[in-house]
Length: 265
Image 1 (cartoon, rainbow, N blue to C red):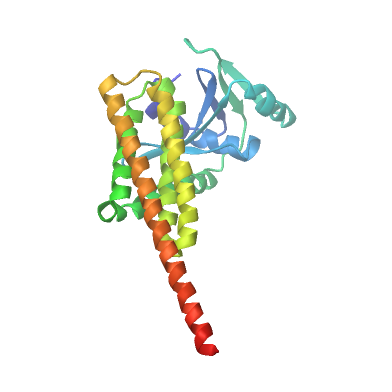
Image 2: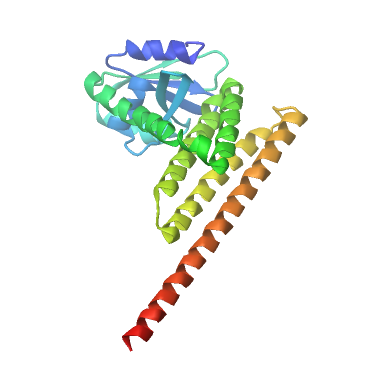
């Protein structure tokens, strides 16, 4: 079994007819073309995730618990008259599994892959202008960047499960920020802020899971928790300011309507 994700990606580039399931602790990880095959033929609603190795070098992947191989995959393998080859991997609880032959439509895969990666890049690019003009987003963005750095240096077994969950939660939070900031109506803007709160809480919750495992030194833990508290306080103050702005606008509209009623009489 390849020792790095880069080697896995190279294998997937040469893949023509097989879905390869790579064991990783209590999970199977599935990358690139194999992920497309899994999504297309076996598990249409499985969550597809992305990861950026470095700028301009990303990949898509998904994962599932080991026990799902028997419940979700193998019944369909049998029904489709496919073969499953097993390879014992040193240090892994489960075997590497290769399901074949499957029709790998390379053109369809590339289009499917680009949709996920372009969505990630689009959100990242759209949020960039707010970095210099909105202190709340700047501080949140800086925290997300620090978390990204931490994820990249996680132990591999954590990076490919919890780490990728954190990265996807960060992208979702960025997307929610963008939708909120594009919403001009104040009442709707506050509703979108509710989603931002939820998504930011998800990022914090997932990163706390990592922090609680004591992989960071005490000073780094304290710095992160201080930044979390500051970000939450800024979100709270932003909400208060928007609520006051909405109340003021509603009062002005009510006064204007009352004036129109009096004039009409």
